[in-house]
Image (cartoon, rainbow, N blue to C red; front, side):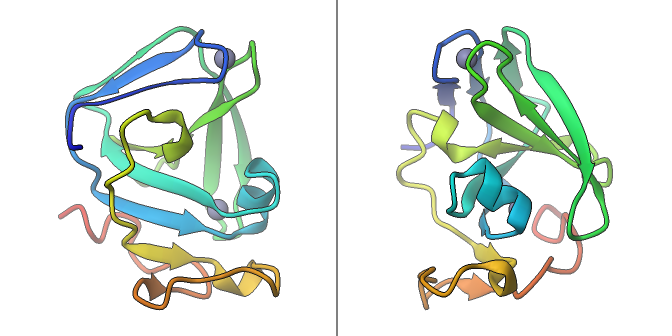
Length: 143
Ligand SMILES: [Zn+2]
Ligand SMILES: [Zn+2]
């Protein structure tokens, strides 16, 4: 499957359609992501906000990430399902938690990040680029 991608939160109050392909796809093992993903890594696609249509209300909460950046998580206020992440230094692009998408099965993971914070039982696909922390340049693959 390729773009457009379609998705929704668990209760269906928030739906989204994305017209373009992700700039990158990453698994993130930072501690905040482990909390968001029930102990595992989050799977994230960075998409341009132009071409992204979101309906329903999304609540945003900010925090200081392990990278030192101020990051916000967007979630459905009805079911609590986390859908988005955004970082002010990624202008014009927004992270989508891939679990929200119905048709993201064929996307390829470009990198596994924050491996230094992963638990000992975590498995990293050896074919995928790995970073112990935040890779340099938040939009390095978007140029
Ligand atoms: Zn919901
Ligand atoms: Zn993370």
